[in-house]
Amino acid sequence: MKKILLTLLLALVLIPNSIFAAKYEVPVKLEKFGEPGKESMGNTALKKTAEVEEKDGKYFYTLNLKKMNFMNMEGEITNLFVFDADDNSNKVETKQTPVEGEYNKIHEFERVNPKEEKILVAVWVDAMDAIAGGGKGSGEQKAYLKFDWANAKELKSENKDAKQEKNHAKAADKVEKASKSDIKIIVNNKEIKPETPAYIENGRTMVPLRFISEALGEKVDWKNETKTVVIGDNKASLVIGSKEIQANGKNITIDSPAVIKDSRTFVPLRAIAEILGAKVDWDGNTRSVVINR
Image (cartoon, rainbow, N blue to C red; front, side, top):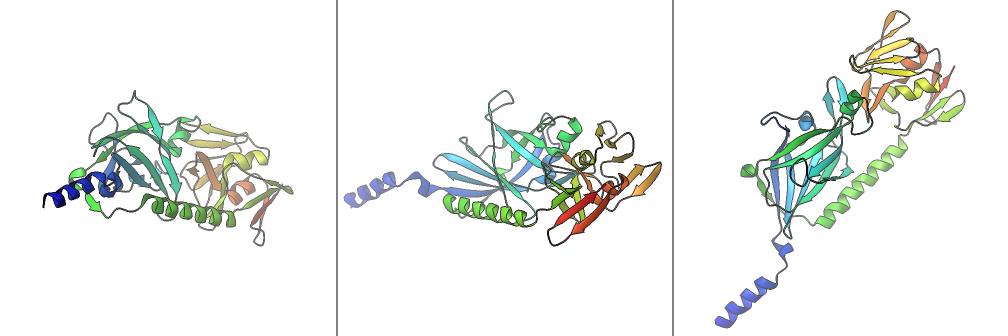
C-alpha cells in the first residue's frame, strides 16, 4: 500500500504544470483612469467578456474589440499598451490579430500576477488622434481594464498552438478577401494609391479626403475647434459626421457623411470630385474609379 501511495505522489510531482492549465471567461470593462466607476470612451468597442488562460504560472489574456462611434465619428482602438504596474512603469503593446465578425480584432498579452482585478492600459483611438491634430498616438488615453473575477466562468482549456493556428488562418483569409476587393483610383490617366485604401460603404466609394483633394490640386485644412475640413481656398467645407457640404455658397446634401477611419477623414468620392469640377466614372471590370479634370 505504501508503495502505491509513493508511486502516486511521485507521478503527481513529475506531471508538467501545463496539465493543470485552466481557462476562464471573465467579465471585463474599460474604466477611465483617475475617475473610478466611469466608463472609458473605448468601452463600447470592448467585448464584455475576456478569455484568460492560466498556464505554467502565467496568465494569458485575450480581448475582443470592434469599431465604435465617437462624437459622430467612426473610430477604432488601433493600439493598446499594457503597463507593468502604475503609469510610471514600463508598458508593452498587445499582440493584435484581425479576425472576421463583429469583433474584428483580438488583442493578446500575458501577466504573471494571478487574477488581477484591474490592469492599467494606454489606449490609442484613431478618432481621438484626428481630434488631437497630431500623428498616431497623439490622442492617447489611459484607462483601467477592470476584471470581475467573482463572476468568471471556467472554460474547457484549448491548446494554445491550435488557437494560434485558427487565428492565423482567419487573418490570412481576411487578407485574401481584402486583396480581392481592392479599388483602383485613376486620376487623369494615372493610377494613384492612398496610404489608407478606399472602401465601399452603402454603395458609395469612400476615399481619404486629403489624398483625393491634393491629387486634384487642392489643399486641405483642418479646424479642430469645429471639427471642420476646408478644401482649397474655401471652395468647400464639411463637418465630420454631417451629410452636408458647403460649396459655392450652397449646402449640398451627400448620401454618406464624412467619417474618420484609421486617422484619416473619408468622404464619398463622387460628391467631392464633382464639387471640385472633376468627372467620375466607374469601371466594374477592373474595379476602378476613373477621375478626369
